[in-house]
Length: 80
Image 1 (cartoon, rainbow, N blue to C red):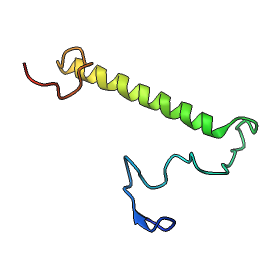
Image 2: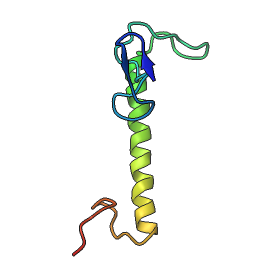
Image 3: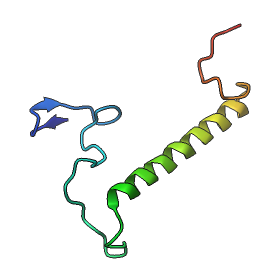
Image 4: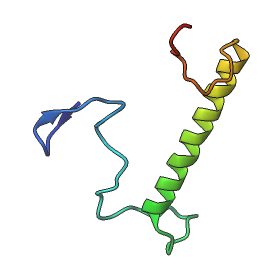
């Protein structure tokens, strides 16, 4: 994706992706049902941490289900 502000190409997904999380955004819109006094940047960080934790839990569960051992060593543990 071409970024007009930096005049560089940025990947759509992953590290240094285009349309990043908004940590440097000076203003964020508040939806009709949201609390107007809540900090939207803190909420976004908490939501992302919850998503990452859920993803890691599911990854460990998948490794265990597929016979990968304890799941804490990672997907590509070196062979003994």
